[in-house]
View 1 (tube, helix red, strand yellow):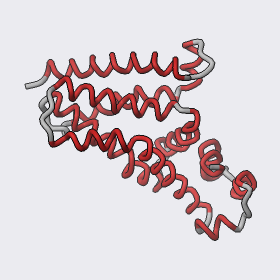
View 2 (cartoon, one colour; view 1 turned 135 degrees about the vertical axis):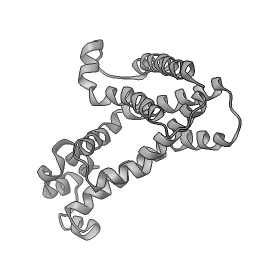
View 3 (cartoon, rainbow, N blue to C red; view 1 turned 90 degrees about the horizontal axis):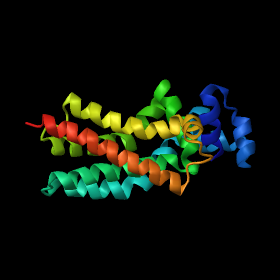
View 4 (cartoon, rainbow, N blue to C red; view 1 turned 90 degrees about the vertical axis):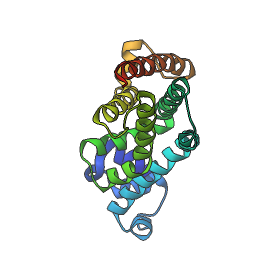
Length: 205
């Protein structure tokens, strides 16, 4: 979407609705007609990103949420954590989601109503699921600060591969993060999830 690319690269103020309309092959009048103006278009981009993330992550989240009512041992719970973290990593590292990431990172730095829409949609759902799994694994209340911070630490590792994309490529000597590179990332993420989980397990009551 032309608007996603423009807002992600330039931000709300610098992005031109005329340039967005030209890039989309649409009439400039279509923006106020369909979205009520530039702000409405910006929020529509946030909604589209949220919907796209849920479309990709929804099946994984749905399976995890369905399993919350069933008794799970720690090994199964750990596997679910790894599945969730890997699913997000693979989603965020896909080339087609680069524009999403730029938009989301801008909203992280300077939140607007768009951040609220992103957070209340896919972000909150993913964090709730991750905290629930970590809490179950550690035998603790998922609302505890330590559990929440652990969840954010895991997500931070995933986000780094997109937010620091150029640094990752330069450090690794890669030209892209393709299927082979993703498998290398996956192995490290699995090891990190296991190590963090073990640390929680040692503190478990």
